[in-house]
Amino acid sequence: MENKKGSLEGPPSKRPRSEQIEIPLCVLYLFLTKLNSYELGLVDIIWLMVNSCTIDDVGKIIEGKYQNSKTLFGRLIIQRSVTSIGDYAFCGCIGLTYVIIPSSVSSIEDGAFLGCSGLISVVIPSSVMSIGEYAFYGCYGLTYVAIPDSVMSIGEFAFDGCSGLTSVTFLEGITTIGYGAFYKCSGLTSVMIPDSVTYIGGCAFSDCHGLTSVTIPEGITTIGSCAFSECSGLTSVTIPSSVTSIGKYAFDNCSGLICVSIPSTLTDIGKDAFPEGCRIDKR
Image 1 (cartoon, rainbow, N blue to C red):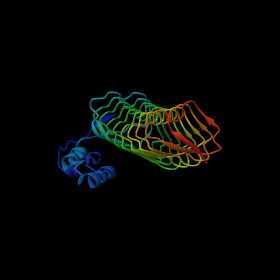
Image 2 (cartoon, helix red, strand yellow; image 1 turned 60 degrees about the vertical axis):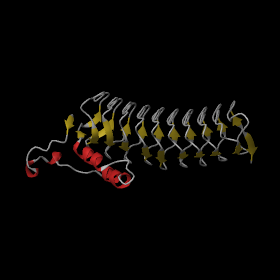
Image 3 (cartoon, rainbow, N blue to C red; image 1 turned 45 degrees about the vertical axis):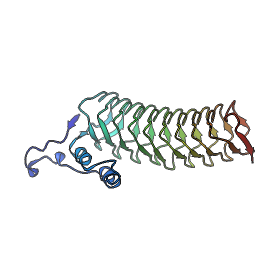
Image 4 (tube, rainbow, N blue to C red; image 1 turned 90 degrees about the horizontal axis):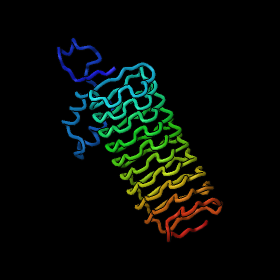
């Protein structure tokens, strides 16, 4: 059910409780951290407070229910009655800028926010266990995302094309970063992958031209084909002794990589895994 908020008709005492203006923590955070840097002005804060909408579905938001909606814009508040965000539920809702997902939600399914190009921030709670394929595909306005420790896997192309994304925080818990999960996130400058990850899928960070350093922790056994290919700004990568397989073209065309140290236990190295001219030192 779509419910456009922001109407201030009637005295405050006679307004229904659901129409009282509340400032969520994420908006307060943005106000405190971004106002002084001129990234978000007071007018923007007020606009977010007034221009908001609420989704109060019960259970799972069914496939494509709000797809390409023109009435959803500004701040989207999903109520605690929702337990799952279905496939393509908000696909193409280009007016959305901030999304608050409640702790009742356990999954964000395939294409849930695909093409929401106006989306700047999304709060993913620690109740979410999986992020589906193409979930935030093409959300190029998204600048930061925190993956909570409850998320075990990020689906294929989940954040593909999020070129405005400059920072990603992974908490311990995630085990799999899917194929193309952060493909063409050209704004990313560094990635710290937690110890819980055991598999980095093919093309996971391919074409992330802004990426300069990557820390791959002990525990990872496989780096997929083209996982970091075309990361032309990459100058440093640490490959731990737990890695036993690096797929073909994994670091191909990473022209900034001059030397890479690999463990002696690494026996499976695919074709053109490292850029031409890169010195390989075994330790």
